Image (cartoon, rainbow, N blue to C red; front, top):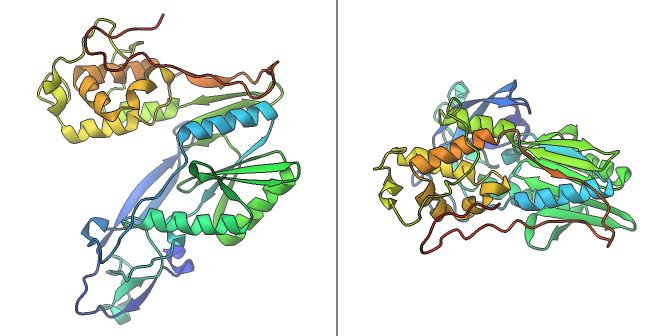
Length: 359
């Protein structure tokens, strides 16, 4: 609640006769570190945004985030050129977004003003749970960072760059997580100072864990490695697969496509809860391991082919692949430039035949 008052999120007013106030609730969460240890217990006030009326309480809701493949490319570039990789976190980021609509919310439970119990909160800033909260925050940050001289990278709305002579800095934004990458410590420090003036920030030093990804780095050898082992463990525990038998192939070599599509709606031998299945699909698409990233890029195909026992097999494969990460060797390229690679998946939907397993 201190953050609410500091950001002047609302003012108490009488509710207009023609309007309804959005309700809210308290959410309690545990935040963990790279090893899964609990570091913070958080209580967050969240609006019941599902009660908002489109066209009255909100309009546009889309908000971009940085693409994970772009994040990995920049991390590889940073390792190759030995750039600094710093990490920051915006505290209560959504409370910094400006509300354009006229929006009212009931006073939060436990913090009702006894002198104005009949009044409601007229929101001046966005709060978590509102349909437009993420968009409001993103637009505010976009304006602030551009005022400091950063420009958006082409095709990436949440990756910014600033070049000054031989100094270069990249800023990656993923909701409230920030990565600063560059070759000039003075420039990066000035960006940190500027952001601290504009928002309430947490300086996390050199990047070690972001978006569920552990970052390992050996600067003397220009090596960098990424691992999602903690994230994979969370998924396996959430869907009660942590005790399952491990597998090492995301697809059975002799499995035929175009069969048993009745499992699409959970009527076969697999997972029968359609909501649980969709949650599994969403989380799988966040995994970058190349051996099954091809299937995660097509959610419809992934849904049909991996439903039921197939999806269970993929979960087991994930467990079998927990120790695996992506590693960039950082070796100089004799032809110049940054070395890169392209993983070509085998055909995802052959009309006939069986799944091919690369040698």
